[in-house]
Length: 120
Image 1 (tube, rainbow, N blue to C red):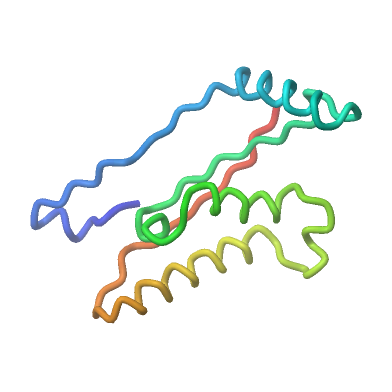
Image 2: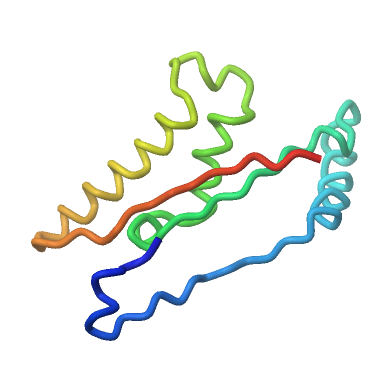
């Protein structure tokens, strides 16, 4: 991921990294689910990781990307329209690509997304 061709002219990709503690997320999730739904337990918490390039994140907030991905992974009835995770990711890429075209430049940044479900 990154602008490999731009390295020749001095561009260095500096990733934005957020490190989350899964146990603390589960504890926060337990507090939230206990207050909103007594039928849920800490085992109901689902986690996933998304890696995306700035070509996508220049036009979408990380939370919006996460919601879009989560809808294909976890939400009930999410696949009624037959859309898999791959289709949801393709839609994100196509939307970002269109946003780059709307800028009216003869340029489009690299657009990459990778998703990994986390178990346990």
